[in-house]
Amino acid sequence: MAEFAYGPVELYLVGFEGDRLDPGTVEALEELVDGGEVRLLDLVIVSREPDGSVRIVEIEDEGEAYGFGVLELEQSGLVGAEDVDDFAELIPPGTSAALAAFELLWAKKLASRFAEGGGVVLSTERIPAPVVNQLLAEASGEEG
Image 1 (cartoon, helix red, strand yellow):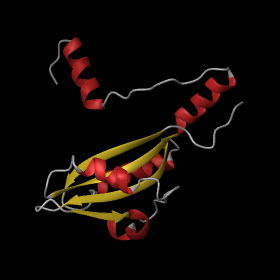
Image 2 (cartoon, rainbow, N blue to C red; image 1 turned 135 degrees about the vertical axis):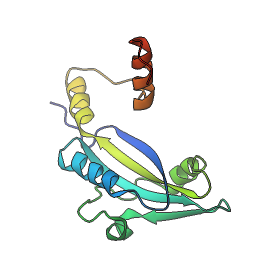
Image 3 (cartoon, helix red, strand yellow; image 1 turned 90 degrees about the vertical axis):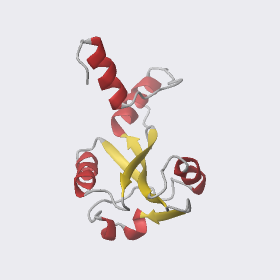
């Protein structure tokens, strides 16, 4: 089997009030990592101040203070300044967001199998969960 060192990586920008993710969200991240569904490669907290300036917290350095006691990053530094600049524009002033790089471990296995069979993944597109749920609710006659 063609074995890749890493699978596909997705960047997620998750907005929230204040400057810290809630404990339930941190717990969900830890469960996904512990369950082997994703590998958290990098995570930064980006806060946009009311004046529009941006403050960045590297979880690698401040993880304990932000509730990430047992969560370890696999490849800190993957989320770069250019990524932060691009995504920071989407954060409303006075709020924050977590910018996370997830390796999709199930997709790594699938990509390895495709490569083994001579296939090449030409493109992928993710449809966000709220969109999928809304479309399926409309299709089944339920409004969600």
